[in-house]
Every structure is written in structure tokens, then in C-alpha cells.
Amino acid sequence: MMEEIKSSQQAIEMEDKYGAHNYHPLPAVLAKGDGVFLWDVEGKKYYDFLSSYSAVNQGHSHPRILETLKKQAETLTLTSRAFYNNILGPFEKYVSEYFGFDKVLAMNSGAEAVESALKIARKWAYEKNGISPNAGKIIVAEQNFHGRTTTILSFSSDDTAKNHFGPYTPGFVKIPYNDSDALEKILQGEDNIVGFLVEPIQGEAGVYRPDNDYMKKCKEICKKHNVLFIADEIQTGIARTGSLLAVCGDCTCQGHCEKQSTYVEPDILILGKALSGGFYPVSAVLANDPIMEVLTPGTHGSTFGGNPLGTAVAVTALDVVKDEKLAQNARKLGELFRERMQKFIEKSDLVTLVRGKGLLNAIVINDSEDSSTAWDICMALKENGLLAKPTHGNIIRFAPPLVITEEQINECCDIIEKTITEFKKK
Image (cartoon, one colour):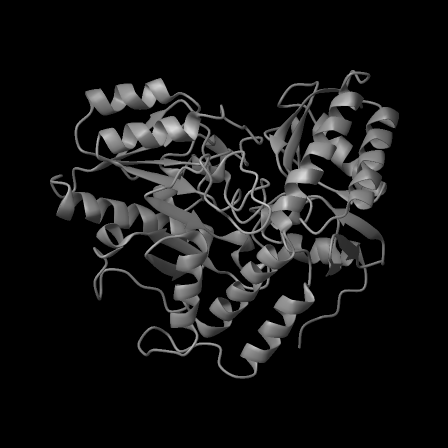
């Protein structure tokens, strides 16, 4: 029987003793979530401004998703792909039509979806694009974050994630982010290029938003050179940036995605996190038939990928995004948040910049990356009832659930401004 946790300190000490030390959590021991709020073991209430790295865009414990989880769990949870089940086909039809692709491959984690996309891209290049087997190279952007599996960290720029895990997987070429000329140059000078894997906004790197025409230029260059444009929307997708996908650009859709002129269609789209609203690990790779058909029986698989429980939950999670117009809410409140932060920055010596899109935003703290200032500010925010985490030392990312209201976002801005105004560097 599992031991009952009665205090935050007890939980922290237990994790420290029995768990691998692969994370450095903020010392908030959470026990309950509802909408935009979290409560710790002692009952203190917080605004969640991380959303489990954008996995709970629909808010914690959304009642519609919870009801689907309960109903499906009482009926059928797992069959493996050795057999058909009555949920996977409808899920595949729904998701393919929802995002506008011919086919979808259902997987579990985000990193697993990235790995799957890399496999699909290479197999397509060898079988359909005349590249010799085992010679294919994939272009990636500097400061990327696509996961921490051995292959993915092989092209990571994060030394902490990468060091002492070699030998590394070859076949990747790194170029600067937000530099379409660098992409053109590498495609003119290198042979055997399979595709370009890129985040439309680099979230983990500190919410770096590229030029508005960067995605469009990259897609055009990839098309000209007959290589695949692969968009990793695991963190930016599913309404987070104020559009259904970040590759939708500055669209003005008022309901579901209308694929306006600002939309840049990836050849391969990678999704995860909010695909299940935080209830169950579900990820997906989407592509059209000429690409996806390279997968044949035995070439790829996952025991849990496409399981009835996860896929049923994902359909409801996507319904919630559409029905509650969460992309539109993120668009409106994201503008409000950045406007308030910008006004605050103009009278603050401690914050130098706010950037982002929709409700994926960050502020840059006026200190070095190796300082503790951003961490200390997050600790002060915690004491004032708001949870956020620093990234890359001096950057604080702010990403609340997309169900947040205008009244709540203003209250959170009050907390952030008050905390920073009263903060004293150690």
C-alpha cells in the first residue's frame, strides 16, 4: 500500500531519496488541480502559469474530458495493435480531418512522436526521393528542443541534456534559427537532405518567436529542393499561440481553423501534450498519403500507441478546444498580457523584455543566465500564489491554461508586477 503524504516536506524528502534526480522542481507539492488553479498538500491555492509545459491547455480536470476518461476506462483501455478496436478508427478520422491531413499515426509521448517523424521522413527519402539508404541527413535549428531520447539529444544545443550520453546519432545538420538564408545555403551545398525539423516558436529555449514570414520562407525553400518541412508543434500547437497551430500564423479565425492565407502547411506535423488535455499520454504524427504510406506492417509500432483510452480522451480534448474557442481566448488574452507586461517593463529595472504569442510568453530578467535571480523571482511568485518556472537561467516562461478569464489574467498580472516590484536581489 502506498504511503500517504501528509506534508510538502515529507513528499520532497521521499522524492529525493527514492527518485532519480533528473529534475529540479520548484518546491510546491501539488495535490489538486481545477481549471487554472492548483493546490498544494497544505491547501495553499496557486494560479498555474506553466500548464505542465502546455499539456493542460484545456485546464486541470476538465469535466468533459474527465467524463470520457471514466466512461472509456470502464469499458476498454488497451488492446495493443495486434487487434482492431472500435475507438482508433473514429479517432484517426476525426484527427485527420481536424488538422487537414490524410493520415495520422497515434503514439504516446512527444519525444516518441518526434522519433516517429524522423523515421517516416528518412524512409520516404530512401524509397521515394532517391536518397541512398543510411545517407539521409535532417536539418535542425540551433537552440532546439525536441526531447531527450538518444537520437534527439544528438542534435541538441543543451549541454546539460547532452553531455556524457554519447556516442551520438549521426545524420543531422544544425543551422541558426530564424534564418531562412541559412536553410537555402545548406540545401544548395549539401546532398542527401531529407527534411527540415523546426519549432515554429522555440518554447524551451525561452519563447523565441521568429519573423512572421520565417515559416513561409522555410516551406517554400523545402518545396523547391524537394525536402520535407517538419513542424514540431508539441508545445506550440492546439491553440496555445492564439491559433490552432503556430504554423497558422497571425490568422483571424473565430471558430475552428479555416486555413487562412497565413497558414503554412507542414509535410509532417508533430503533436502531443494538449492533445489529451493532460489526462493521458497521447501524441501524433500527421502527413498525407504519399509520405505516410511508407509505413507498412512491422516497420513501426507501440503497444500503447492508439489505445482506446488515450484516443477517446484525445477526441474530447480536441472538441473542448473547438467548442470553447480556446485559440481565440489565447489570442485575446495573450495580447492583454503582453500589453500589461510592456507597460510594467517601461518602469522596471529588473525586466528588460516580454515576448511571445497567444498565451505562450516569457519575460527576460536583467541578470546573467548563471544568476539565481529568475529562480528567486519564481520562488517569490510562488509565495504570492502563482507558479512559473525559469528557463535558460534568466528567462521566466508564462503559459497559463487557455481557459483563463480576462479577470483572472489581470489578477495574475497584478501578482507578477507586485512580486517583481517588491523583489530584492540576493
